[in-house]
Length: 319
Ligand SMILES: Cc1cc2nc3c(=O)[nH]c(=O)nc-3n(C[C@H](O)[C@H](O)[C@H](O)COP(=O)(O)OP(=O)(O)OC[C@H]3O[C@@H](n4cnc5c(N)ncnc54)[C@H](O)[C@@H]3O)c2cc1C
Image (tube, rainbow, N blue to C red; front, side):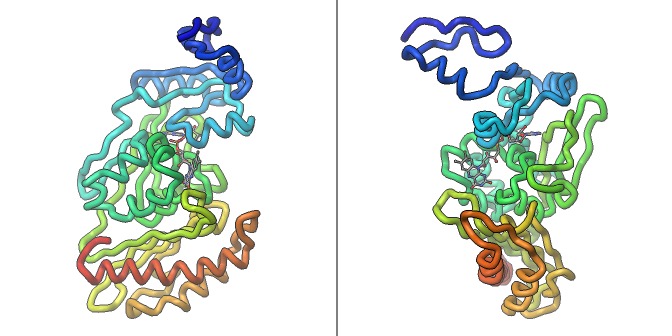
Protein backbone atom coordinates (compact mmCIF):
# COMPACT_ATOMS: atom_id res chain seq x y z
CA UNK A 1 0.00 0.00 0.00
CA UNK A 2 1.28 3.48 -0.70
CA UNK A 3 1.79 6.54 1.39
CA UNK A 4 -0.92 8.36 3.31
CA UNK A 5 -2.69 11.23 1.53
CA UNK A 6 -2.20 14.66 3.10
CA UNK A 7 -4.81 15.55 5.73
CA UNK A 8 -7.66 17.85 4.59
CA UNK A 9 -9.38 18.56 7.91
CA UNK A 10 -13.17 18.60 7.76
CA UNK A 11 -13.35 17.28 4.19
CA UNK A 12 -11.59 13.98 3.70
CA UNK A 13 -10.42 11.25 5.99
CA UNK A 14 -6.77 11.99 6.81
CA UNK A 15 -6.21 8.23 6.90
CA UNK A 16 -7.28 7.60 3.28
CA UNK A 17 -4.46 5.65 1.60
CA UNK A 18 -3.18 6.81 -1.77
CA UNK A 19 -3.09 3.60 -3.81
CA UNK A 20 -1.45 4.94 -6.96
CA UNK A 21 -0.05 8.40 -7.56
CA UNK A 22 -2.82 10.74 -8.75
CA UNK A 23 -5.81 8.68 -7.55
CA UNK A 24 -6.51 10.94 -4.62
CA UNK A 25 -6.27 14.08 -6.76
CA UNK A 26 -8.88 12.58 -9.13
CA UNK A 27 -11.33 12.17 -6.21
CA UNK A 28 -10.77 15.81 -5.24
CA UNK A 29 -11.61 16.96 -8.76
CA UNK A 30 -14.66 14.73 -9.17
CA UNK A 31 -16.88 15.90 -6.32
CA UNK A 32 -17.28 19.47 -5.15
CA UNK A 33 -15.97 20.04 -1.61
CA UNK A 34 -18.28 19.34 1.31
CA UNK A 35 -18.03 18.65 5.01
CA UNK A 36 -18.74 14.98 5.66
CA UNK A 37 -20.64 14.27 8.88
CA UNK A 38 -21.20 10.72 10.12
CA UNK A 39 -23.57 10.71 13.12
CA UNK A 40 -23.93 7.48 15.09
CA UNK A 41 -27.54 8.07 16.21
CA UNK A 42 -30.75 9.48 14.75
CA UNK A 43 -30.81 12.16 17.44
CA UNK A 44 -27.35 13.34 16.41
CA UNK A 45 -28.27 13.24 12.70
CA UNK A 46 -31.43 15.32 13.27
CA UNK A 47 -29.41 17.84 15.24
CA UNK A 48 -26.65 18.16 12.62
CA UNK A 49 -29.22 18.40 9.81
CA UNK A 50 -31.15 21.11 11.68
CA UNK A 51 -27.98 23.06 12.51
CA UNK A 52 -27.13 23.35 8.80
CA UNK A 53 -30.67 23.18 7.41
CA UNK A 54 -30.22 25.20 4.21
CA UNK A 55 -26.75 23.91 3.40
CA UNK A 56 -27.00 20.24 4.30
CA UNK A 57 -28.20 17.10 2.49
CA UNK A 58 -28.75 13.70 3.95
CA UNK A 59 -26.71 10.88 2.35
CA UNK A 60 -28.39 7.45 2.20
CA UNK A 61 -27.18 4.94 -0.43
CA UNK A 62 -25.68 7.74 -2.53
CA UNK A 63 -26.90 6.16 -5.79
CA UNK A 64 -28.68 9.35 -6.83
CA UNK A 65 -27.02 12.00 -4.69
CA UNK A 66 -23.39 11.21 -5.53
CA UNK A 67 -24.01 11.46 -9.31
CA UNK A 68 -25.82 14.77 -8.66
CA UNK A 69 -22.76 16.06 -6.81
CA UNK A 70 -20.41 14.84 -9.55
CA UNK A 71 -22.52 16.68 -12.15
CA UNK A 72 -22.65 19.79 -9.93
CA UNK A 73 -26.46 19.59 -9.89
CA UNK A 74 -26.30 19.69 -6.08
CA UNK A 75 -23.74 21.66 -4.06
CA UNK A 76 -24.47 21.06 -0.36
CA UNK A 77 -21.89 22.33 2.12
CA UNK A 78 -22.59 19.44 4.49
CA UNK A 79 -23.43 15.78 3.89
CA UNK A 80 -25.03 13.99 6.84
CA UNK A 81 -24.37 10.28 6.23
CA UNK A 82 -27.08 8.04 7.73
CA UNK A 83 -25.30 4.75 7.07
CA UNK A 84 -24.05 4.25 10.65
CA UNK A 85 -27.50 4.60 12.22
CA UNK A 86 -28.66 1.04 12.77
CA UNK A 87 -32.09 2.10 14.08
CA UNK A 88 -33.00 3.34 10.58
CA UNK A 89 -32.67 -0.14 9.07
CA UNK A 90 -34.96 -3.13 9.38
CA UNK A 91 -38.28 -4.69 8.48
CA UNK A 92 -40.96 -5.58 11.05
CA UNK A 93 -44.75 -5.76 11.34
CA UNK A 94 -47.10 -3.87 13.60
CA UNK A 95 -50.89 -3.35 13.61
CA UNK A 96 -51.51 -4.78 10.15
CA UNK A 97 -48.66 -2.88 8.53
CA UNK A 98 -45.12 -3.65 7.50
CA UNK A 99 -42.74 -1.09 9.03
CA UNK A 100 -39.58 -0.47 7.03
CA UNK A 101 -36.66 1.64 8.24
CA UNK A 102 -35.82 4.34 5.69
CA UNK A 103 -32.22 3.10 5.36
CA UNK A 104 -33.25 -0.45 4.47
CA UNK A 105 -31.63 -1.33 1.17
CA UNK A 106 -33.65 -2.15 -1.91
CA UNK A 107 -31.86 -5.51 -2.10
CA UNK A 108 -32.78 -6.40 1.51
CA UNK A 109 -36.43 -5.68 0.70
CA UNK A 110 -36.24 -7.77 -2.45
CA UNK A 111 -35.02 -10.79 -0.46
CA UNK A 112 -37.20 -10.39 2.65
CA UNK A 113 -39.60 -13.29 3.38
CA UNK A 114 -41.91 -10.96 5.28
CA UNK A 115 -42.15 -8.58 2.33
CA UNK A 116 -42.69 -11.48 -0.09
CA UNK A 117 -45.58 -12.71 2.06
CA UNK A 118 -47.25 -9.42 2.98
CA UNK A 119 -46.34 -7.04 0.14
CA UNK A 120 -45.49 -9.13 -2.93
CA UNK A 121 -45.84 -6.09 -5.19
CA UNK A 122 -42.69 -4.58 -3.71
CA UNK A 123 -40.15 -7.23 -4.83
CA UNK A 124 -41.79 -7.32 -8.26
CA UNK A 125 -41.16 -3.60 -8.69
CA UNK A 126 -37.72 -3.66 -7.06
CA UNK A 127 -36.44 -6.15 -9.60
CA UNK A 128 -36.79 -3.44 -12.28
CA UNK A 129 -34.58 -0.91 -10.44
CA UNK A 130 -31.10 -0.60 -11.97
CA UNK A 131 -29.02 -3.68 -11.19
CA UNK A 132 -28.30 -5.69 -8.01
CA UNK A 133 -25.18 -3.63 -7.22
CA UNK A 134 -27.26 -0.44 -7.25
CA UNK A 135 -30.04 -2.02 -5.21
CA UNK A 136 -27.52 -3.20 -2.62
CA UNK A 137 -26.68 0.45 -1.85
CA UNK A 138 -29.91 2.27 -2.75
CA UNK A 139 -32.48 2.59 0.04
CA UNK A 140 -36.26 2.76 0.16
CA UNK A 141 -36.13 6.09 2.02
CA UNK A 142 -33.60 7.48 -0.47
CA UNK A 143 -35.72 6.60 -3.47
CA UNK A 144 -38.88 8.12 -1.96
CA UNK A 145 -37.13 11.25 -0.67
CA UNK A 146 -35.47 11.74 -4.06
CA UNK A 147 -38.90 11.87 -5.75
CA UNK A 148 -37.79 10.96 -9.26
CA UNK A 149 -40.89 11.02 -11.51
CA UNK A 150 -39.58 7.94 -13.38
CA UNK A 151 -38.78 5.85 -10.28
CA UNK A 152 -40.69 2.68 -9.41
CA UNK A 153 -40.97 3.00 -5.62
CA UNK A 154 -43.06 6.21 -5.45
CA UNK A 155 -45.70 4.47 -7.59
CA UNK A 156 -45.59 1.42 -5.31
CA UNK A 157 -45.90 3.62 -2.19
CA UNK A 158 -48.94 5.35 -3.73
CA UNK A 159 -50.75 2.24 -4.87
CA UNK A 160 -50.22 0.46 -1.53
CA UNK A 161 -51.28 3.50 0.53
CA UNK A 162 -47.95 3.88 2.37
CA UNK A 163 -47.52 6.25 5.31
CA UNK A 164 -44.16 8.02 5.53
CA UNK A 165 -42.74 9.05 8.89
CA UNK A 166 -40.62 12.23 8.92
CA UNK A 167 -38.72 13.53 11.94
CA UNK A 168 -37.03 16.80 12.80
CA UNK A 169 -35.16 17.95 15.90
CA UNK A 170 -37.41 20.94 16.51
CA UNK A 171 -40.89 19.62 15.63
CA UNK A 172 -40.62 15.89 16.34
CA UNK A 173 -42.42 13.21 14.31
CA UNK A 174 -45.17 13.51 11.73
CA UNK A 175 -46.74 11.04 9.32
CA UNK A 176 -47.39 11.94 5.70
CA UNK A 177 -49.63 9.84 3.42
CA UNK A 178 -47.84 8.86 0.21
CA UNK A 179 -50.47 10.68 -1.85
CA UNK A 180 -49.51 13.97 -0.11
CA UNK A 181 -45.76 13.32 -0.24
CA UNK A 182 -44.79 13.71 -3.90
CA UNK A 183 -45.23 17.34 -4.93
CA UNK A 184 -43.38 17.57 -8.26
CA UNK A 185 -40.18 16.49 -10.00
CA UNK A 186 -37.61 15.73 -7.29
CA UNK A 187 -39.78 17.65 -4.82
CA UNK A 188 -41.47 16.14 -1.78
CA UNK A 189 -43.33 17.32 1.32
CA UNK A 190 -40.17 16.86 3.46
CA UNK A 191 -39.03 20.11 5.12
CA UNK A 192 -35.35 21.14 4.94
CA UNK A 193 -34.58 19.91 8.46
CA UNK A 194 -36.56 16.66 8.27
CA UNK A 195 -35.29 13.10 7.80
CA UNK A 196 -37.52 10.34 6.50
CA UNK A 197 -37.17 7.63 9.13
CA UNK A 198 -39.78 4.95 8.46
CA UNK A 199 -42.25 3.78 5.84
CA UNK A 200 -45.40 1.95 6.98
CA UNK A 201 -47.29 -0.04 4.38
CA UNK A 202 -50.59 -1.81 5.17
CA UNK A 203 -50.57 -5.52 4.37
CA UNK A 204 -52.19 -6.53 1.15
CA UNK A 205 -55.44 -8.08 2.34
CA UNK A 206 -56.48 -11.64 1.42
CA UNK A 207 -58.51 -11.60 -1.80
CA UNK A 208 -56.29 -8.83 -3.10
CA UNK A 209 -53.99 -9.26 -6.07
CA UNK A 210 -51.24 -7.02 -7.34
CA UNK A 211 -48.88 -6.63 -10.26
CA UNK A 212 -46.11 -4.31 -11.45
CA UNK A 213 -44.72 -4.09 -14.95
CA UNK A 214 -42.81 -1.53 -16.97
CA UNK A 215 -41.23 -0.86 -20.33
CA UNK A 216 -37.66 0.48 -20.48
CA UNK A 217 -35.24 0.67 -23.37
CA UNK A 218 -32.84 -1.74 -21.68
CA UNK A 219 -33.10 -3.94 -18.61
CA UNK A 220 -32.14 -1.79 -15.60
CA UNK A 221 -32.86 1.57 -17.25
CA UNK A 222 -35.43 3.90 -15.78
CA UNK A 223 -38.90 3.06 -17.08
CA UNK A 224 -40.47 4.93 -19.97
CA UNK A 225 -43.74 3.92 -18.35
CA UNK A 226 -44.31 1.71 -15.31
CA UNK A 227 -47.66 0.56 -13.91
CA UNK A 228 -48.53 -0.80 -10.46
CA UNK A 229 -51.99 -2.18 -9.73
CA UNK A 230 -53.80 -3.61 -6.73
CA UNK A 231 -57.28 -5.13 -7.10
CA UNK A 232 -59.82 -6.90 -4.88
CA UNK A 233 -62.13 -9.27 -6.71
CA UNK A 234 -65.24 -11.09 -5.45
CA UNK A 235 -67.15 -13.55 -7.62
CA UNK A 236 -65.54 -12.23 -10.76
CA UNK A 237 -66.44 -8.59 -9.99
CA UNK A 238 -63.97 -5.87 -9.06
CA UNK A 239 -64.71 -4.59 -5.56
CA UNK A 240 -61.85 -2.09 -5.42
CA UNK A 241 -58.87 -1.25 -7.49
CA UNK A 242 -55.96 1.20 -7.57
CA UNK A 243 -53.46 1.95 -10.31
CA UNK A 244 -50.27 4.03 -10.04
CA UNK A 245 -48.07 5.01 -12.95
CA UNK A 246 -44.50 6.21 -13.25
CA UNK A 247 -42.86 8.07 -16.14
CA UNK A 248 -46.07 9.75 -17.29
CA UNK A 249 -46.07 13.07 -15.41
CA UNK A 250 -43.94 15.30 -13.16
CA UNK A 251 -44.50 12.79 -10.33
CA UNK A 252 -46.00 9.34 -9.85
CA UNK A 253 -49.74 9.36 -10.54
CA UNK A 254 -52.45 7.48 -8.59
CA UNK A 255 -55.96 6.60 -9.77
CA UNK A 256 -58.43 4.86 -7.48
CA UNK A 257 -61.86 3.21 -7.70
CA UNK A 258 -64.17 6.00 -8.88
CA UNK A 259 -61.52 7.63 -11.05
CA UNK A 260 -60.95 4.37 -12.93
CA UNK A 261 -64.65 3.57 -13.21
CA UNK A 262 -63.99 -0.14 -12.73
CA UNK A 263 -65.70 -0.88 -9.41
CA UNK A 264 -68.54 -3.36 -9.93
CA UNK A 265 -67.28 -4.20 -13.43
CA UNK A 266 -66.32 -7.72 -14.38
CA UNK A 267 -62.62 -8.47 -13.95
CA UNK A 268 -61.49 -8.56 -17.55
CA UNK A 269 -62.69 -5.42 -19.37
CA UNK A 270 -59.96 -2.87 -18.89
CA UNK A 271 -59.34 -1.42 -22.35
CA UNK A 272 -61.82 1.45 -22.05
CA UNK A 273 -60.46 2.50 -18.64
CA UNK A 274 -56.88 2.36 -19.99
CA UNK A 275 -57.88 4.51 -23.00
CA UNK A 276 -59.51 7.12 -20.75
CA UNK A 277 -56.45 7.17 -18.50
CA UNK A 278 -54.07 7.57 -21.46
CA UNK A 279 -56.14 10.49 -22.81
CA UNK A 280 -56.26 12.41 -19.55
CA UNK A 281 -52.49 12.13 -18.97
CA UNK A 282 -50.01 14.53 -20.52
CA UNK A 283 -46.82 12.43 -20.55
CA UNK A 284 -43.42 14.00 -21.16
CA UNK A 285 -41.41 13.49 -24.36
CA UNK A 286 -37.66 12.88 -24.25
CA UNK A 287 -34.88 11.02 -26.06
CA UNK A 288 -36.34 7.70 -24.93
CA UNK A 289 -39.92 8.09 -26.07
CA UNK A 290 -42.45 10.58 -27.42
CA UNK A 291 -45.64 11.56 -25.59
CA UNK A 292 -47.85 9.54 -28.01
CA UNK A 293 -45.63 6.49 -27.50
CA UNK A 294 -45.92 6.81 -23.72
CA UNK A 295 -49.72 7.05 -24.10
CA UNK A 296 -49.58 3.90 -26.19
CA UNK A 297 -47.63 2.21 -23.37
CA UNK A 298 -50.30 3.28 -20.87
CA UNK A 299 -53.04 1.80 -23.10
CA UNK A 300 -51.05 -1.43 -23.41
CA UNK A 301 -49.65 -1.89 -19.91
CA UNK A 302 -52.64 -0.87 -17.78
CA UNK A 303 -54.97 -3.67 -19.00
CA UNK A 304 -52.18 -6.22 -18.80
CA UNK A 305 -51.20 -5.30 -15.25
CA UNK A 306 -54.81 -5.06 -14.06
CA UNK A 307 -55.61 -8.43 -15.58
CA UNK A 308 -52.71 -10.08 -13.75
CA UNK A 309 -53.66 -8.38 -10.47
CA UNK A 310 -57.25 -9.62 -10.84
CA UNK A 311 -56.11 -13.15 -11.73
CA UNK A 312 -53.95 -13.22 -8.60
CA UNK A 313 -56.86 -11.93 -6.51
CA UNK A 314 -59.25 -14.51 -7.94
CA UNK A 315 -56.75 -17.28 -7.28
CA UNK A 316 -56.88 -16.32 -3.61
CA UNK A 317 -53.24 -15.40 -3.53
CA UNK A 318 -52.13 -11.89 -2.77
CA UNK A 319 -49.98 -11.55 -5.83
C1 LIG B 1 -26.97 3.29 -12.75
C2 LIG B 1 -28.19 3.57 -11.89
C3 LIG B 1 -29.42 3.09 -12.31
C4 LIG B 1 -30.55 3.34 -11.52
N1 LIG B 1 -31.75 2.89 -11.97
C5 LIG B 1 -32.86 3.17 -11.26
C6 LIG B 1 -34.14 2.72 -11.72
O1 LIG B 1 -34.28 2.05 -12.73
N2 LIG B 1 -35.22 3.06 -10.95
C7 LIG B 1 -35.11 3.80 -9.80
O2 LIG B 1 -36.11 4.08 -9.16
N3 LIG B 1 -33.91 4.20 -9.35
C8 LIG B 1 -32.79 3.91 -10.05
N4 LIG B 1 -31.59 4.35 -9.58
C9 LIG B 1 -31.55 5.13 -8.34
C10 LIG B 1 -31.48 4.22 -7.12
O3 LIG B 1 -32.69 3.49 -6.95
C11 LIG B 1 -31.25 5.06 -5.88
O4 LIG B 1 -30.82 4.18 -4.92
C12 LIG B 1 -32.39 5.83 -5.27
O5 LIG B 1 -33.05 6.63 -6.18
C13 LIG B 1 -31.89 6.77 -4.19
O6 LIG B 1 -31.64 6.04 -3.06
P1 LIG B 1 -30.30 6.25 -2.24
O7 LIG B 1 -30.50 5.50 -0.96
O8 LIG B 1 -29.13 5.90 -3.06
O9 LIG B 1 -30.36 7.83 -1.89
P2 LIG B 1 -29.28 8.97 -2.03
O10 LIG B 1 -28.73 9.00 -3.41
O11 LIG B 1 -28.30 8.89 -0.92
O12 LIG B 1 -30.22 10.24 -1.78
C14 LIG B 1 -31.14 10.67 -2.74
C15 LIG B 1 -31.84 11.95 -2.23
O13 LIG B 1 -32.71 11.66 -1.17
C16 LIG B 1 -32.33 12.34 0.03
N5 LIG B 1 -32.50 11.37 1.13
C17 LIG B 1 -32.03 10.11 1.14
N6 LIG B 1 -32.46 9.47 2.24
C18 LIG B 1 -33.18 10.36 2.94
C19 LIG B 1 -33.88 10.29 4.18
N7 LIG B 1 -33.93 9.16 4.90
N8 LIG B 1 -34.52 11.41 4.61
C20 LIG B 1 -34.50 12.54 3.88
N9 LIG B 1 -33.85 12.67 2.69
C21 LIG B 1 -33.21 11.59 2.24
C22 LIG B 1 -30.88 12.76 -0.19
O14 LIG B 1 -30.56 13.92 0.55
C23 LIG B 1 -30.87 13.01 -1.69
O15 LIG B 1 -31.40 14.29 -1.95
C24 LIG B 1 -30.43 4.09 -10.32
C25 LIG B 1 -29.18 4.55 -9.89
C26 LIG B 1 -28.06 4.29 -10.66
C27 LIG B 1 -26.73 4.80 -10.19
